[in-house]
Length: 626
Image (tube, rainbow, N blue to C red; front, side, top):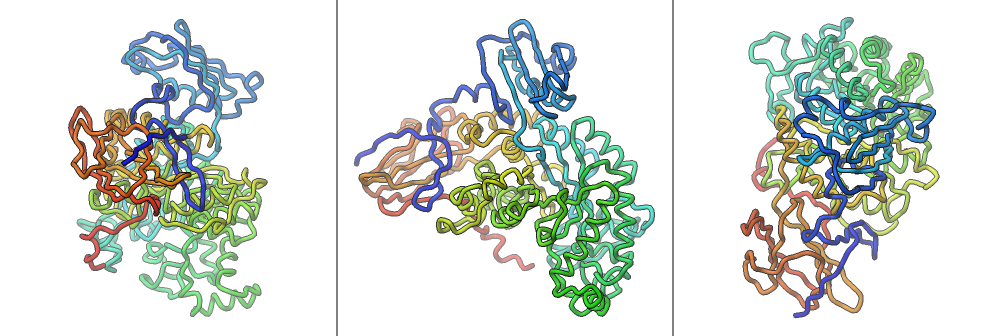
């Protein structure tokens, strides 16, 4: 059997209708950039010899300001923009330059990450973010998380230069914000009979309880809590974007205010009555109080997944359609969204919503949060709308991050950190669009089968966001486990230019940050011990075999003779070629010991093996009756 070692490139490419990740030096070596474990990777960084010597404990205790010379001047550093910075570290000094306080803040985050036991390495950095919108969404409706946890997450957001916190405050799991004019929103809609989502929602209990009921599950933020959260965020250069769901996902509203739904009674549907003028009065009243609490330029109004069932049988809705010349139910929803957009604009705010709002003729200031794959991101951007890219099947933290059988129950999907990192947020070619959608759908797609963002519309994509939906996330520790370390992939995607991002450079830096996260009290997942095997045909016959793993530093040892890998087996350090069908067995080793399961895969010379991160439902969930 002939085996030939190859070098690779560490980037996703398209060939023959397939998406490939070619990698070099997977295990054998660390790129120079990996020795400075900054996340997100600065866009222009030169590492020099030597260190600015300082005790790391002293640096942390006394703060960065004592050891640096910081110069903020909008005229001198205008090219850095609002969030860019320059950092120069020599053996004798540390200089930080920025146009604004935000830029200086982000420079200090980089400095914090550079500090080591030897001091601060000598570097020259000039850094600006790729996107102005770098977001984390947290659903506090399905499960309520205390303000202390929200602030803890914001500390990590700031550390990794994320600047938008999408606060999902209302949904059918419970209303989570105090509204003075409508007190029954929290007194009757913030608590429920059960914590477990499957028991309460999927098995159709769906009963809310009055505040104060013994053993009721839930909670809400007072206005003072919200002010405290917003103030905490502002100090960390984070904009808090509140979401008030409209016109759907509002079952909890109608427990206290049943007149706002078509049936006029609770537990009869989750959509507001489009034909009831009280609906719009209610929303404007609520949003007025929300606007008073949140200085954010954006207010999120949901706008997604309206079933429209009750509208079809509602005389008020039908009367409105006749009066306004509305032709169908989609157009009726557009009417509702347009009224909210008009109201928010009158208050000096920008409307933002899930991608169903792209059916509207939106104002230039409004923004679409695209969650339904590449197709809808392309549609919204090509229509001329601003887009935040967050495809659910790739950038949702509630999906499994390792083989589902090894993980606590999650939503039905599979998004390991490599998949998240590999997504291209601005797909301006047919090839990149198909690559994205193949990972999103978890299967092969024909070339040119997915719409892409026309290059002239590339700047319509203003950012990316990771979303933590909480149906299966019951507490703070589990929330952190699902978000980290995957949030680091979002952070680098959002900040670092596309041509600078490489999975094999990110991997060692990510691994270096996990013990730091855990030392800061974050219950981060520590990555899987499994091995990924992919293959591709090469010229003149044969099959190139590529092995990869999330963990670093480790060794991959493999065999081609059917034997179980041992510490003395072949060490994988680059792709290799096989010219005959063979069984590849491989395992991860650290200090001579196997860390995880042994991979066993039949590799042929005809059919390629690709990984589209397909979700396979665990056997123990298949028989659970909902």
